[in-house]
Image (tube, rainbow, N blue to C red; front, side, top):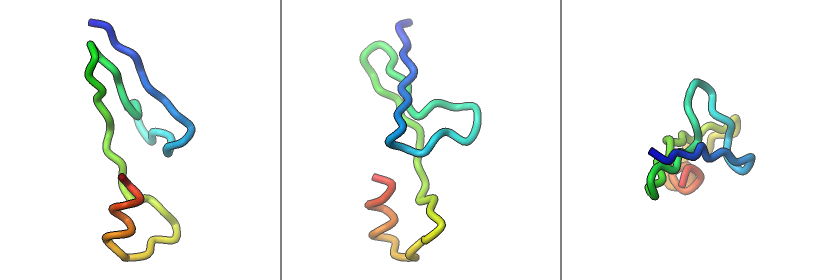
Length: 52
């Protein structure tokens, strides 16, 4: 299996033993992202846009 770990400084660093993404045999597997912000707005539409 050909596997490449994907890591970018344009996303929050992993907080635990996982990668931001892994490319394996032409498929990109990505980890989830939560709306982690000190200044949470409480606006679900805005927070959804933030994690996407």
